[in-house]
Image (cartoon, rainbow, N blue to C red; front, side, top):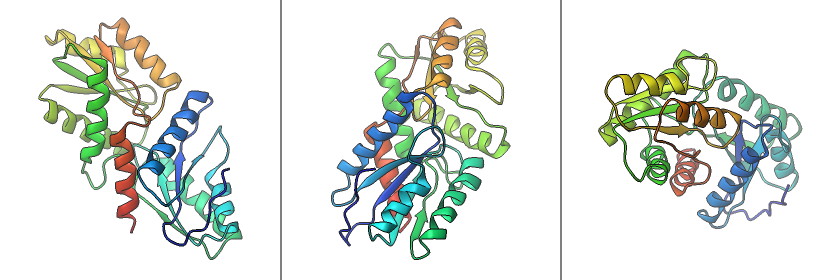
Length: 249
């Protein structure tokens, strides 16, 4: 981990991603950390992962405490407040504080909807990726997400789909790469059966990986005109992370 100097001015930020066996996912998280740090002069922004990639958030927090930091902001790079936000992230913070009891860790909200509200920066990131992928336009959308068994988390994805459809004035269906139906292919097929001629897919993913690859293949086979890239380090996403940091006080 890159050393974090103790400036006494701006607390360091730790980003916590889910983690993936796909190395592209880790690089996307590192790129977002660099983008957030560039937009936040005077403070370091360090990436971490809950699984598959090192370092984990507990290790990063311990190293920051050992360097003399007493106040850290931790941002879960998660699009829903499901199991990882409710269980894994608090457990990582608790483990760090066992050896650093003087460390204050302010955990922000996830990047997805908070209290039912979808941040404009999240919609901006989705729209930016769609504009890059579909220069010819579209008349219907599928919002493709990773998937979860948590009904509250699925409701959160539905709110993003509704907000995106309202902003773009097109019908939007949700699809999931795992854990819940429908998959991207059937979602595209249903929209085309209802008269849509140009169906595009918005990727509700923070990083590339096997799920996004599967969405691309299935959606193309079903006749989608384009599939957007994951959000990775688009400026809107970096802005959203900074808003979460600010809201944490």
